[in-house]
Amino acid sequence: MDYGERLKLTVEISQSFTPSAPIDRLSLFAGRTQQVTKLINTVSQRGQHAVLFGERGVGKTSLATVLKDILGQKHMDFAVASTNCEAGSTFASIFENLFSDLPLEYREQGMGFGQVTHKTLSSMRDVLPVNPKPEDIRNLFAKTVVPTILIIDEIDRIEKGATTVALADTIKTLSDHASQVTLILVGVADSVDGLIKQHASVERALAQIPMPRMSEDELLEIIDNGLKKVGMTADSGCADRIAKLSHGLPHYTHSLALHAAQAAVARGSRRIDKPDIPKAIETSITDAQQSIVSAYNLAIASPRENLFREVLLACALAPTDELGYFTTPSVREPMSKIMGRSYEIPAFARHLNDFCTKDRGEILQRAGAARRYKFRFKNPLMEPYVVMKGISQKLIEPPVLDTLN
Image (cartoon, one colour):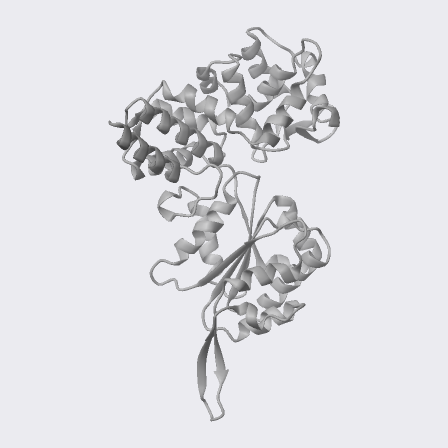
């Protein structure tokens, strides 16, 4: 493989694996069959809307992004618009953003009996009132010809108050009048509760679609799809290692596969092999978000020798429930493997509680009652980072991962 071929392939790999951006091509999307089916069922029923929720990093935005491709298939003619919310987003700004990219094809009654004409405007924003109300949105869609899907992402960033109340009211009125528009709201679990509290009757009109972490089979599908796109393969053990390190989060699957594939190309190969995995881990650590790096360093910082680094690693290796929580006893086995000897709960219980304090950056969240506490990482993206740091620092060897979780 000459230099030009290696350079071309390196570029193609960077387009197939995108850890820093949501997937926007159906051909590279993997898994999520259940969630896709629920979304299609929702948009096919008038008066139904959906909220897609889950931990950060599980691929909610990617699913929302490829939805346009999915619904653009044969026999599915929908107009689709999407927007991302910010801390200062208002009801008006959300719909201004949505309507800016949405052409309006509408019906207009003529002077004569039965005369109905279709007209098209370049943007629905042209007919949006300055300070729209939920009923204004419903009235606009009452005139439209094409079924419409509006995707509102990161709704958890909206300040609770007038905006969330207006969104709930919009869902209610669109549902009551069976309008041919579907709202798909994307956020974390707390945002679902917030919406329903604003308008209890919204619950019946809102399909609640949880997005759990991806299975290892789904992560392997991401790797396989991406490599096929560029004419590469991977040793099965290497692909399994990438999936295991990802902890169900596609962001890390993309990151590790990207850097492992480019490491393979750098040595002139079209196949990811064992030597490429350590290089991928090191590069993924280097490329980690600064917020992750800073939070990790704050959590383990101490002027003297301590076990904070090792205990945090044990937490990242502990088995979790479907909500990402682990128990204190579940930390015992990984801690013992890290230290090379048996470790009991009193040796690290204080560390777990310290990780929940501001002094340690509240890297863990605690729930439950005293003596029966359970914990989880505040930012799910921290878990794989901690494990990769542990491997990089020689605290554990990669095969240890296969004996845990």
